[in-house]
Length: 288
Ligand code: SAH
Image 1 (cartoon, rainbow, N blue to C red):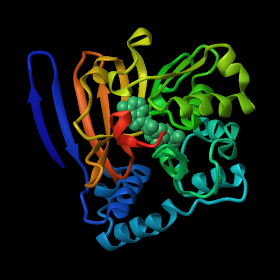
Image 2: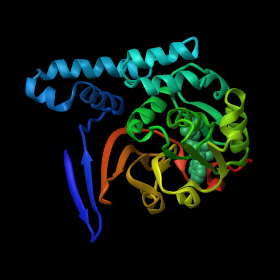
Image 3: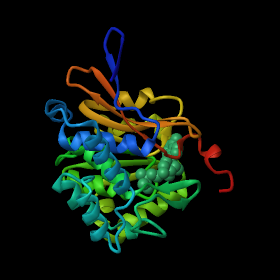
Image 4: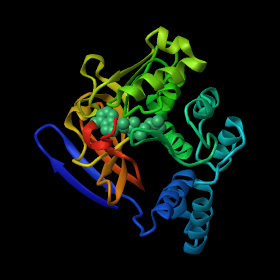
């Protein structure tokens, strides 16, 4: 574990880098298995390395293999593979049928193109995001979904924060904003009509000040220039952001950024990932 303290007068940033390996899928799963069984427990039991590696490899083979024939089957498989761990996440993903958001291969555990250089993320990445933000997605919570794309996660967030909660989606491709609203209206028009979900055209790197602060911020595209300060500012004390950080051609890390109640910022690098870049709309796709 690498720890670096970057202090200024108000904040202390802790960078934690867990279990780096050369194989990005292995790393994802080593971390996932460590999370499932508890890192401390594994250390205390002095489990043979080979067993840990075997568990990790078994999980590697399952992370991308939660495909189903239906949405329920897909969600059941994500749960069987321990990617979904909380009932609330399972319930939200069952209420939001991915078939209404993905134009093809709806129940395949892989990202799918939605046009304009964008993708709907893979179901296992959606599940990881909901699990990581689970504590912040309680009833009445406020959520910012940056790069809301298909609208799928915005709808899941809305299911989890309930009638008293609010979800703001920010997406810089106007056609995707229109399409995502239509997608949500196919099964839950009340979310849009009531204002519980509001999706706007904008540059997500600036967040959305008028509704800040947010208990949870999800960023669905990789920040090449580092984590935008505005997003950290718009996080509520006790809030959590999940954001991929890194170059579009190189390695990206999914980071979890917590703002503690006293304002301290704690950053953890969780796993290597591959997302489309958080960028200017003109450089994302020039033909629209
Ligand atoms: N969670 C979404 C991910 C969509 S892909 C889903 O699963 O459907 C990432 C999205 O980020 C794309 O739709 C892209 O258009 C958008 N994006 C990239 N840079 C952006 C920016 N600066 N501001 C807002 N949206 C951005």
